[in-house]
Image (cartoon, rainbow, N blue to C red; front, side, top):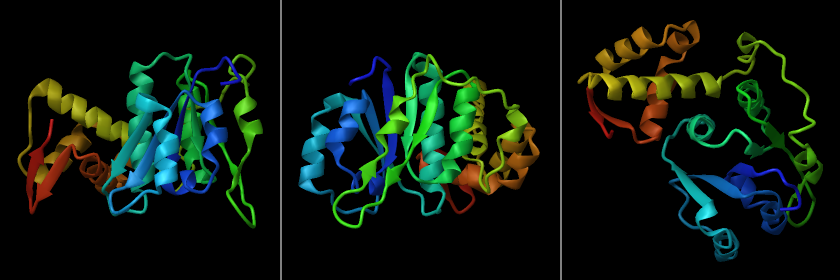
Length: 226
């Protein structure tokens, strides 16, 4: 790395396959690649490049069929790492999707430097990473002053859904309770997440729990994997 800032990068496989990895590895300490389970093969050259990072490269399989599956999983993963990793480590999402902006803002609000770095489309060859986006030093970053209630401006608030899913898992583990039917689990989620947006997006919370393989649903029966 050319900067003293320790950084974890999060990227969708489709984006990773479109850029020159050698530039990305210069600006990250760890990389988390979210990849759909229905992708049958990964180019050998890309696998070989990723292997240079060893244990610092993580492949995160996503099984959900929802168009929001990757975004939900991204928020869930970043939430887990935010809770356990040193707050001096910067998070960076490499994506052109504006839907990640509310997640970036929320992580900043929680006291960790977080950025979204874009790529520039090229007519031929690999896309170009906007390296200027990585030069933002956490020691000179603007203080994020927005109120938490102003973060849910996007059509789907991945952070809210991730937080509801994480809170549900924690409460289920702490209480030892395991609602056996899907309808009972939904009631449990609503009871322990008193938020109007959670009520409106309850099916997306359930979908995330399934995508993360925390639960599976067989008709109306819920099977837990924790």
